[in-house]
Length: 190
Ligand SMILES: [Ca+2]
Ligand SMILES: [Ca+2]
Image (cartoon, rainbow, N blue to C red):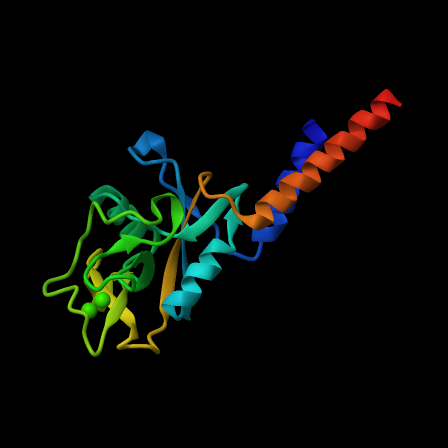
C-alpha cells in the first residue's frame, strides 16, 4: 500500500516538475488550504482554461483560479501574481453581462464576489468576455478583456489547485496505482 502511494506521488511530482512551485493559502493564516500558481506565459484566455486544467500539484487538480472573497483575491492577485496581469476562470460568453465561473468547484455558478475596476466590466471594443485581475497595474482590480472584441489579448494566468475537480490524467494515474496494488496483493497471496 505504502509503496503504491509513493509511486503515485513520485509520478505526480514528475508531471509538475517543470512548473513554478505553487504557494499554499494555509488554513492557519485564514485561507482555504488551496494552492495557487501564477504562470507568466502570455496566452489567449481560452488557452489559459485548458492549460490550467492540464496541471496538477501534489495530486490535486489544477483549474483557472476562482476567486470568491476579498481575502482570496488579495492572496492570489497580490501575494502570488504580485500585481501582474492574469486571467481568472470567469466569463460572460454565455449570456452577455452574466458573469459565471467556468472552472473549478464553482463551475457554472454566478460570481458571489467581484472586485471590478471603475467602469468595468465595459464589454469594450465589440465584446470582452473573459476576466483578468491586476488590470492596468491596478493591483487586485478586475477587468473584462479578450475575445471577441480583443481577440488577440494574451497575458499570464492564475492556476488554483484543490482536490475537488477530477481530471482524466489523474484518474488514469489512480487506475495505474490500483493495478499495482492488486498485483502486489496477488503476489502476496500466491
Ligand atoms: Ca462581455
Ligand atoms: Ca473591459
